[in-house]
Image (cartoon, rainbow over all chains, first blue to last red; front, side, top):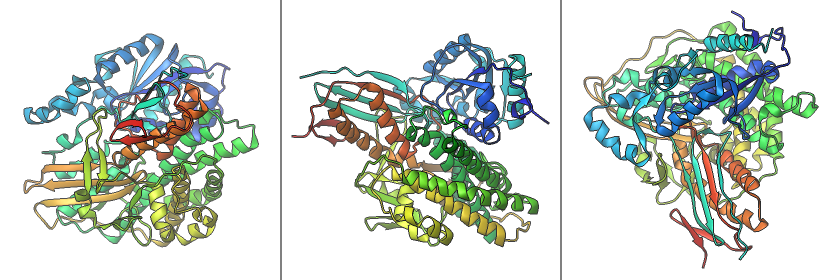
Length: 172
Length: 451
């Protein structure tokens, strides 16, 4: 399978896809996969991606209008929920990245804890204002595209990115 | 007194995961300097109980994305020791290759995507200009090294993140001959880039010296998987006894735990390893990195970056030797010789000593377990160093942005990993100028002027 996003033959139109990459409760495995996919594709991605917000890559992050927000991780606090709602307003498309964003697990494993385990963790939940349950992204905001996997499936991500680059007329 | 109000509330960037730095300066005094890991815990210590032990390593690998294969191997070792598995020579060699792939990939990510932009006054590694010859070379070197480590991880362990081939008792598959040839080709091709990396970090201007206890698991030859825990102050501890020497330190504003060793803060990671074991590195590494190795032992925290670059060369040289000399043969997974037990797995993860302990019952289920990660061990040192760095910087009356940048550079030198975190690393600095020449000392987590 080929991906325009990865091909030097893809023709940039001069526009760039305005993206944000956000991580919440997870192990950031998909962020690492993203940086590994970059090994072979960075020259093309530099031409077609305008990274507005990505804590792992840069300091000067801007939370403003985006074509696409990639959101990794589940939501464990009200702060997380408020942030993704804000992102949803700013982004034309939201892509859920990885198992925790798509399905909640394994971040949401505490939702199923028995009484003994809940008692053990309750002081931490109280002290740092954790929500009672960890939620997958779709429970809080509308998700347009899902890239499942733990870490995210590389080919599914590249296909999704390719499709978005075409949809937003970034490549022809 | 001249007062300057500094209020920063920004994400700290180019680190693995999430932490908070909260600094308050009032009337020329640093009220507090707190480095707290703001990870929203996912409670693996509780979740592991009752799981079938064979499912444990892949579960615990999910603690951390970038260090996942280190967690995987530490958990496998703990389970193997608990139930008396005897890994084959080839399984041990493939575990070592898994660690080499991890360290090449992970160190290169840290050195280039996180640390290198600071050295060139850039915001992001992707801002480097491919039309500038030097920056063009840096871009290519970074991705060539990362790709070589990634490929090695894939052919040996199945994946570079959350690997699938390492299992309790051995490996579920061996690399194909053509993959080995390709890996040697990629690793050999990346070697000049690694040598340039060492040279770049030798020339790096930042310096922050601190006296501390450096600790690592050390073996001869150099290993990320075997050995004894030693320090530069004469400590010598067996793997199984390590936990008994660590004192859990509650840090009230942090979701994670700090640790002290015999009442002292200490440092783990590449700088500790190279300080303690530079003479055990691959002979080709020692030969070609001699000038850099002469700088060790070092108390300069920024030399953690240089130590990582040297380790990349060692991993590359040792991998090439193993791949060229070992004949891989399919072999069955080892089997347990005990019905129940407690096992301890210790590995030198990219950021330092990683400890897993597990107790497995007769029903094959996990009764309890314990995990200590490197960043928890470094956390107290990081906080102390940040406080001293502020003290050094405030007399020059820095603006908020430059103060934050300098603190972030120091944090990045430690290469902390908070990957399980919510990824909101905020810095909040409230305060005023500190009088020139004023010194501070730390009493637990409170900073007060020295009398």
